[in-house]
Length: 89
Image 1 (cartoon, rainbow, N blue to C red):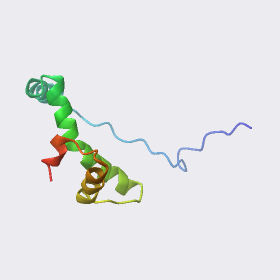
Image 2: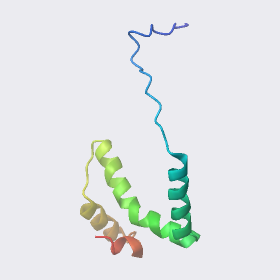
Image 3: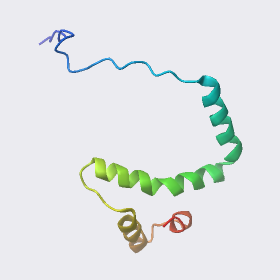
């Protein structure tokens, strides 16, 4: 069965306005980040510091909120907490 598109006035999807991005500023920010985190080890360490925050946000979005402290306790209990995330309490 073929469904025709909804007319624009009742369509649930709205076009969002284009965001203006200062490319020079974005490029400078990217280059500064790349200079600071210039090795795979530094990049991996940075991700390890942020991963628990991302998991907490994701769990809240899914309707199953958990605190960062609780998540660390669960990971520590399982022996899965890395050294770099232990420092970031």
